[in-house]
Image (cartoon, rainbow, N blue to C red):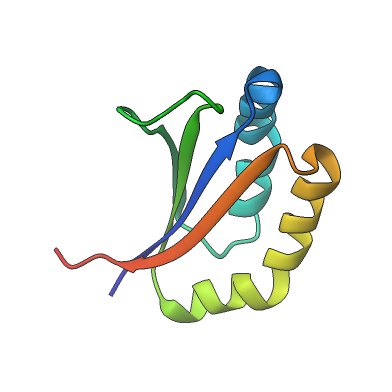
Length: 102
């Protein structure tokens, strides 16, 4: 079985440009370098209310629940803290784990 660790993030408009650059160049590469994920894609949600800022999702592909659990146990708290230290409350993130069924 394969899984997707999905992180959906709404960012405030005034950090948007800097944040997306940081996401692409620093954060996602750092998360994937943990060795827990096969690859990651960044998508922007369309047809959503962007009045408070755009919404993105990062989908991290993982081959096993054990690899996902290893990320959560060993790396997630540090990565979340680094994001908060850099951007404070200027973003809101929602996380979910999904099983690929086909």
